[in-house]
Length: 112
Image 1 (cartoon, rainbow, N blue to C red):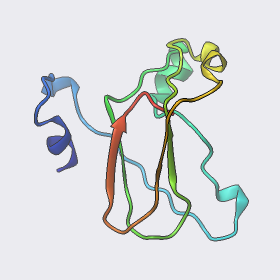
Image 2 (image 1 turned 120 degrees about the vertical axis):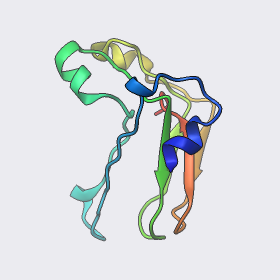
Image 3 (image 1 turned 180 degrees about the vertical axis):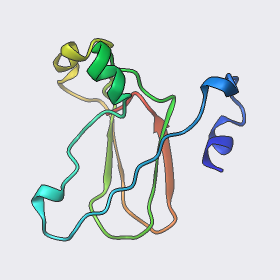
Image 4 (image 1 turned 90 degrees about the vertical axis):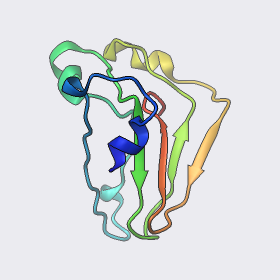
């Protein structure tokens, strides 16, 4: 599926490669349901080693036209999690993806 499509032209070690996925379900009008700006990263490594390790590719697949758009910003964080604030500041590029059923986007997993 998705991994094969995005990895078909890449050299990788199958024993150490794979995918992670999670689903977000949000209710209309509930501010506490918002997903804030974030970098995709290995949360276990952040907690245990203080390191930002990101996927090679991040993807978003829309199942409905409901919800806010996805915003991707040309910002990459420092490797040390406690230095992440050094990555904030002006941006040069921002991409906006509106939710459309069946739409699938992919981008550099290091981007905000």
